[in-house]
Length: 71
Image (cartoon, rainbow, N blue to C red):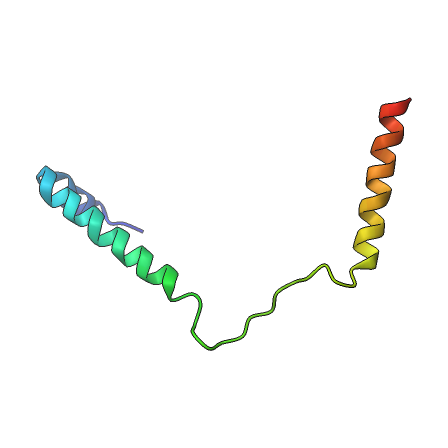
């Protein structure tokens, strides 16, 4: 949580300094985002291949919707 003292200090900054703080924080956030995926690591990815049960559920939902629209 951000302290009220920090917020007060940020409000006292001039426009240029406020923009510099924004730029600093945006760069920090971007850096954290790029570190989420590590080079050379493997990550599981879901694939619809052989997802027969999911396909059947989707087909049932589409058929139910189609029958509602024809009634």
